[in-house]
Length: 499
Ligand SMILES: *Cc1c(COP(=O)(O)O)cnc(C)c1O
Image (cartoon, rainbow, N blue to C red; front, side, top):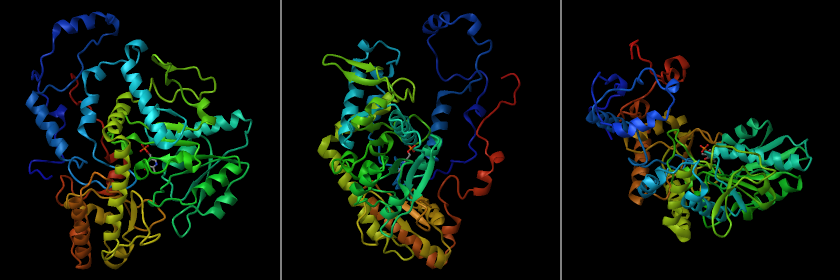
């Protein structure tokens, strides 16, 4: 992971540029025809100011940069709630095939039957996994799916003439995107507290619901990794008040083939393909957050939806109550394709095994880590968790001054990415840990040993945790400076007036 020549102030590719260097010879015959199609008034007067570098400079530059970051391909990445599981390379290989790359969304449907079939079948698999009736593949991420879901709730209530509903209820353990999505849709957010078991306080929920309730947004298992056992009762409380039940399905990894949100009483579900279904995660690239609904909400789904008439697949725009489009074309088709490959690779039993192993790994680790000096497992030390658990480093912080942040930084020196820290906010010095099923027992033990070592260091008053990480390209950053808008430079501008 550490490379002597890796530097945080690596030159930008554009700074390596020297006039006349060539890395690639393009085919001019091909270029001419394309250029002829563009009217001259729309063509550039000057060539674009692209870096001029040799092929080997490009290879070295990007290989070096790729080694300066921590990724799932490099080590254990137990970032709770985010489900950073290994993405099988075959999914990328298939998505990179020329048959997929050369498709265009404006292509005649008759010539794109293959990808439409893939989107149709992926929709079918996902719908079955969450126990819904109909699904849209359009939203580009989990938060986008939530926003789409809240718009669906609004369309439903308005269609029934219920204009006075303006409150969305979320538990205090909810992911931050839940209240944010509700607020973006113009709704007031009402928070309900968790009880001593880490589940929704039902009495508080009863007093929160009423004629103004749009719905409840909840994730189950919740962000503490605890399954809401009383979910049917919770659903009834919300439904009796005329509200809808929204399932934040970002963390489906615990329940695939075991429990369906549809059976728990949910009306709307979003799924994070980049978490549970192993599509690439992060980096700002395209993602997918499909949203499934029950029959009574199906008419409001965004258009188009891929349908099959018995002989051909087609895009159905004919939905008069649709909330419209939430994304161009059919969403991130190549991302859905990767998830489709992942689902085919595993099959029904395989997906069940994924969930079983994810839960087993989380519980093994939770029970080992909670016994290490300075750590604890709030909301039921011995109680089983699902795919993740929230450890507290509050005793460690009190007794040694080593905080969850410092534990996280120090873990990097042992080749382990830090868990999610300081979330959910109802746990002090929270370390939300999700090993996932793609981690072996050896790796789990390696991570447990790293925690033990850090605890020993902390109680021995070593300065290692406080000064870590030491083994990474960028060591301890100045958090205050990194947060000041003027010190972050994310754009590059040439100082050479002719380029
Ligand atoms: C990740 C996550 C989200 C948001 O998903 P994005 O794709 O990052 O927008 C929502 N809820 C929970 C519980 C999550 O873990």
